View 1: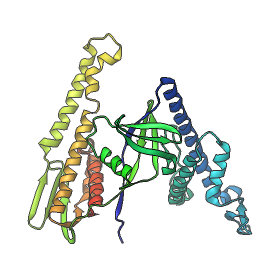
View 2: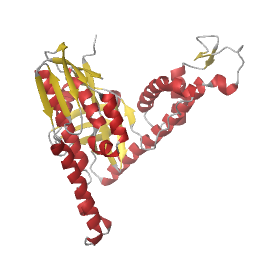
View 3: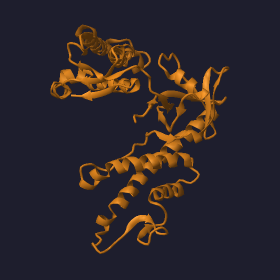
View 4: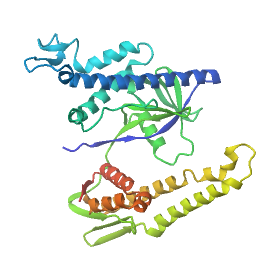
Length: 365
């Protein structure tokens, strides 16, 4: 039976909901402390898991030595003082006691144990090195760490407490589905799963994971839509006698190249720009183009993938075949111009995401 739900991750900026600057700084310092302890704990946990997995090779044990990585109380061959999954938690919780909420360590343990089990054969064979976590990693927590999640009419923001720290959302001029998802989560219509907090340049970003139901459409698995992608036409799709061309070279590529050329002209002209406040004023024209290209490409790809899925829904196509993708991937890797300007992989990712949400099976040919 297919899973009827889908998990969506969004990025939402948060603000510390305290009156004075000193209090806000103290709360932000606390979050940075949790991030630092989570980073150190993650590296320690992975190292412990690796040593446990490779203990026989590390200690050069003979074949006659029998042991099990289980609690010695449950098995006479066990060599651990507790269950294996709990060993890493005990190691980091005793090391960072009182410096980080245990809920963060518990969720960190679960995610690392799962990812380690997936990759341990690569570690054992030498095909992959052990994961290394950066200082700015996002730290996880579940709904037990959130209290008082609601919408405040006075502040016009969604407010909650994260382990006693009062926070509120800052959506700004948001034209996506973030507000709608948060409203549904407050009403209990959708479920919030284990999420993350990311700190960057003094800003707080919440990465909530929403579990929603998949869209229900009258699709027929036997009806097949075939889609192909190229630089001339981003997407060409057909099913039966129906055919649709989505986008064009003039619309996508030429506009993107025009933005790149504008940015280059601004960079060359920055040398002769009027100064007065250091580099900020001289690069004012350049900074306007900082996100222009990526925003344009992201918008176009969303539109193309949305039109493709709408075409499949309209014609009740329950199966979508992406034609000749291996050849297209080879071309994208070999030609630098295509790889930089086509955004092939991003388009494929968004197509698969939207297809899964609509209940359409995607097959890559």
